[in-house]
Structures are given as structure tokens and as C-alpha cells.
Image (cartoon, rainbow, N blue to C red; front, side, top):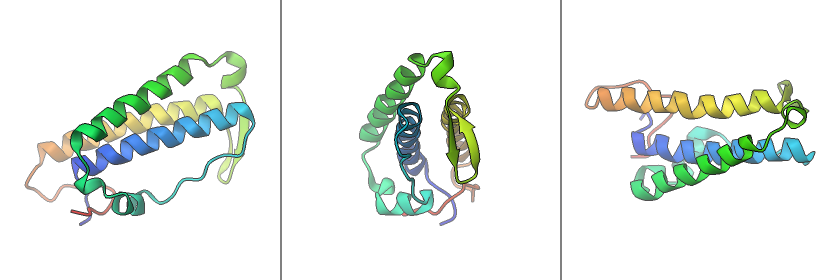
Length: 129
């Protein structure tokens, strides 16, 4: 109950990638920033535990491609755009780095969980399974 399963991580990675891409696009456009909810609640509400793995993996591919396309279109000027967040001012480059970090650290989490299958593990959220 305290550890996300690999399928739950997949759903989270897909959605957080989409949310960060939307945040980056809003920053560059000068639009209002999208809000994101509590990841643990989203895992449960969105039913990640019972999702089709192939659909989630296709979604990760699609959202990653959208993020990459956005990043490839950045210029020095757009990468330097700053926006005020509740936790302070951040530029596009910092949020873009965070987006890449999110995918990387969740990959390591899933590898750790798969490597310790059958043990208690240590994730960062509840499992809806």
C-alpha cells in the first residue's frame, strides 16, 4: 500500500510528462500555468493499477515525443523565460531539466522495484492494487 507498482509508475510518468510539457508551453506563451494534483491521489483516481500496459507505454512514447519536440524548438531566448511559481521564480530551462529528471528518476525507481519484486520495496505513493 505504500509503494507504487511499475504500472502505476508508468501512468504517473506519462501524465507528469504531459503536465510538464504543458507547463513549459504555457511559460513560453505567457499563459496561465496549468495546475497539477496530488500524484498519489491521481494514481488512485485514474486507475493506473488496472490500466493496459501497452496503452500506457504508447502514452509514454507519445508524451515523450511531444516533450522532445518542444525542447528541440527552444531558443536561448525562450529557454531563459522566467515565471513565478508558488515556490519561486524558475526559467524554462530549469523546468525542462526537471522534466528530463522526472523520467530518469522514475525509470530508476521502476528498475529498483522490479529488481526487488516480492520484497516490500520503497516507493513514494500508495498502490491502488
